[in-house]
Length: 258
View 1: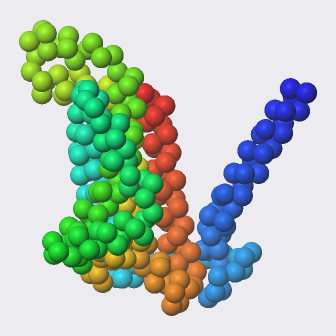
View 2 (view 1 turned 135 degrees about the vertical axis):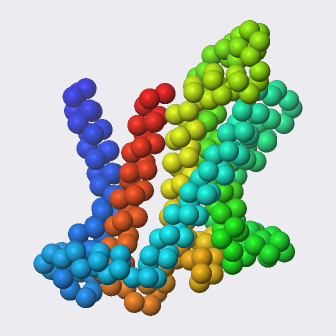
View 3 (view 1 turned 180 degrees about the vertical axis):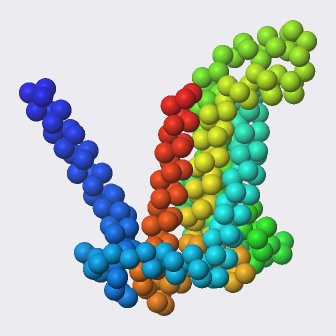
């Protein structure tokens, strides 16, 4: 009976994984088709659609925008999220749980609600249709992932190490840089990766904040799906999937190293 339960368990897990992954993975072989329309199974094999994407100035501009915005948002979210995590972990006050929940609300709030709210606020600040506004918007969306990851690492750190360092005459900055930060670095890097991925494939908020000069790869895909769906769109989607998968793999390896 135990063996049967084990087999059923892994069978259910495998079928669930296939159900979730097949709609995503199926787009990859479709990007190699020789036809001008999306077909499955794909007809023939060609890399022409990847060449079309990489040789297009519009796609190149969108790729540069996506990389720069995602990198900037990830760095900013990592700094702010790590600082907030350290402060919340060290402090003890009434309402701490509520404040942590407030920081994590972007993870559970519908994206369309965040997009409308950010558009209204950023319009008053003159940040709509700017790269800086898109970076700030994605930073808000990414901070909770950094907070969750860093606070999980802080819970595994011996709380007596920092006071011991301070007691031996080290400054707070030296203690943070040489004692605390190395211990929580896997969590910090893991949060950075998740922050990058969050910004990298986000489209709803970008549709509200970005303009034609700051449009990202997900916006380009959205426009292509609405107007001219061809295998080049599948090629871009495959690139996004590969980069996101690599990010998740790196994050998993960082978590294992903690």
